[in-house]
Image (cartoon, rainbow, N blue to C red; front, side):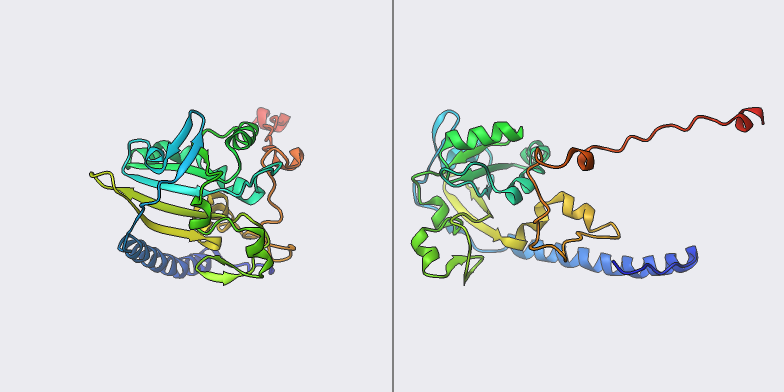
Amino acid sequence: MEAPKIVSRAEWLDARKALLAKEKEFTRLRDRLSADRRQLPWVRIDTPYVFEGPRGRLSLADLFDRRGQLVIYHFMLGPGWEQGCPSCSFLADHFDGATIHLAQRDVTLALVSRAPYAEIDAFKRRMGWRFPWVSSFGSDFNRDFHVSFSREDIARGKVDYNYDRTQFPSEEAPGLSVFIRNQAGEIFHTYSSYARGLDILVGTYNFLDLVPKGRDEDGLDFTMSWVRHHDRYDDSRAAPARIQPQAPSASCCEH
């Protein structure tokens, strides 16, 4: 972190207003980008994908939970893994508070992983999450949406991820996919995003982008290497600070 420039309140206000102009332009650009995203063409989903949830087998239509729009987060938890990906868990910590609000806008949020449902449920219970999370084990769903790769794929050196042929170190990858269902019950894929495109889901990063040190990740071995499962952080750092009220001095009471 560079040493800050110390200025008067008036000088700070001038600098803040200049930054505000850039922030407003960014907001307008983001609004236009979001509008362009909504104008993407749709792809009909004809594959009868099958998932497993707490009450047995589910179709893709079932995941909509009677709503018209579905957002799926592709969570990195493969068959036999001892626990879910820490980075995906970091994102998932932000989801439960959003689900009730999304429902008011005709949107269901659900998570899908390739691990068998019993393994998903055990980890979900450990983390204390409540959002819907189902297994795509035995289905081509993850592979079709480019978030699971075979060992042969990885051995060949490159896989299809984030709309490119790239090297990837794991058989599972993070991502997000969006679907819509019309009145006839037909389902369409409208959008998918991967890698840094998932940043927008991370409320913690939005807070860190506001503070002087920012995300403070430049000196780390890799981005997000500081992230832990929320039950694995050092308690002394994670616990909220307790601010003790200061007892009034004798002089305060006397005057």
